[in-house]
Length: 292
Length: 287
Image 1 (tube, each protein chain N blue to C red):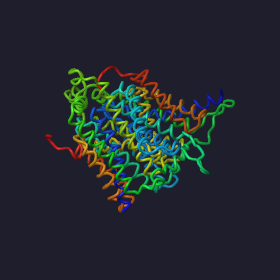
Image 2: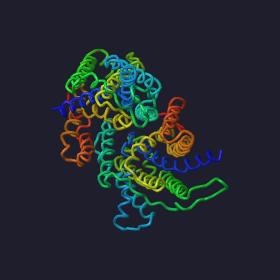
Image 3: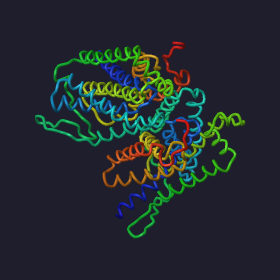
Image 4: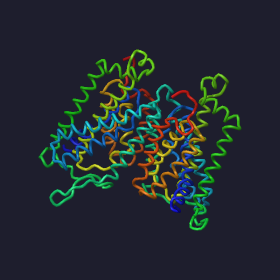
């Protein structure tokens, strides 16, 4: 029983990173009705960019590395928008799907090229802190990951629901043409959405690096799949859904890792997804009826 | 010379894989499960020739049928969701199948070695072709026989009523339904045909490489399957063939002397191609 609780709590804490990645997919989907397949790769790429700071300034504090990854994520988000979405007409959904896949391969290859394919150590904070409650422990670095992710989500929700920019973003996601008629520059809002999701992705990438301890370009494939699974379970376009689903998937997979081993773990995540597709295709928080 | 035969074999198998996604794409569905059907065809037919010692032709047929059956089974629940949800559902199915084969052990002793799939180590010794004295050239002809057959079949589909129905569903589901097209039947049948083609491609792949493992059927392979028809354009089956030659012949083999830079260029060229020709490289206007 204690093992079970321990697995759930560790999983849920790490699940906060899945939630951030899921939010990235879901925001872009909400605004453009497109999937950005390059998103998880860009997040990992941004986390790698954080390591550049250590190259320039040896012994930089981990917090500075995280901040650097955060900013690099925003920049990469903008690059992905320009390369994969800006010049391709909206009437060709397959073309943007393919261009983001091309971008995914490109980012992965740049990372492999820059690091000679070797996994890189990633700095962590509070990794020597352990909170004990009897046999039950909480890892300090995972708590930090969870805290940072929750803070980022809170900032995002404040941005979306308390600022004019957020109002414009929500307007575009509901009715792009009506939003344009009201004087909102749709292309600009789309670009800003990519920058925001990129910032979140950079942070998520850094947090994954910090909690796993190493970064490898091999992370981007599974992370893409997990992010998309979280997006669907939460309901496409729903931010609270992505948060709940991210934590759920994190806890769920860790429990199955405990009982069935790491090789079978993801099989059960896929079964969970299928259960949702069959019994609740709209996800936990199904958006109100509408397009697609 | 064998190198070129090998390349032509690879192009043949990838063309089949691309065509399996092509027919599904015609109905407007994006399926990332093609790699799963490809894996099922590869493992089923490999087990038949190695463990049951069948001839390749019946094993190929059963591999194709297994792919078709899996595709049909996926088709019904997955087609409850559309568009991007289907992309993710099929992606998850593909990953699920890959992880299943990652954990799948079924070995029997044959002589003094054990043969059969062995989890993460994969399935070695699928040696039907070498054991029966087929040369690389023979294998190449055998593969291309199926490529030509499948291309002819799909080309004929395109010119028949069935092809028109497929494209009608792809263009506008509501309009197609309002003139009496049964959407579920059309989509599931396209998925099933695609699954059969992928199963055959998997069987050919397993036998010419002689060794398959779960990593040979990952998301990247599924992405390539849909990339070929999208990059080539959905106008005809030849677009897919041209895209495979462009990707495997030019981007992968032709640029090999660039070394590391080839991989970098690869992604960048796909991004560039989609920016310049969103409808596919080989799409003619007005046709």
